[in-house]
Image (cartoon, rainbow, N blue to C red):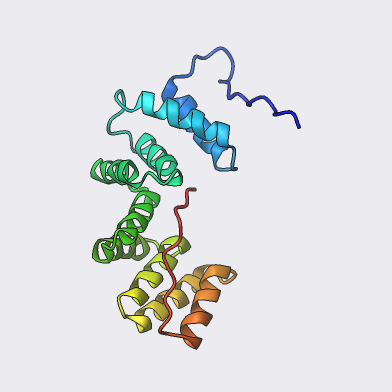
Length: 183
């Protein structure tokens, strides 16, 4: 079976796009599962990073790409830099929390998820991660409350519904936080 040539992202009109802009565009395409776009986004954003060391969008997207590859150390460092730069991107805190939880630092993960979910209870991914972390910390009642809150904002969120059913039927069995998401 022949391999399709990689698609290219091109700027509008006659404008010249910088590596940052092209990298962000490729990162967006990569969200649809395009491996080539992911590789190109990673290359371009890594090239752009020295020029944009506090650009929250570059830091967040590059961190997400690294995390998708299982490279959690550079991903965590990039998410931390995005948060230190004053980014309000909840994805940075939510995904950083997943990394902390995977390393056994549940306290830091919970603090991040509580901050995100407390500011915006409509962010279902953060709420589900918070519920999973609370359950793992032995706080199943708070985990249930959190899931009920998630379902107030997104009643059809299957993962939250399944987790709530699981907690109600087998409270000793806690789910793991969900893998990273991007918008």
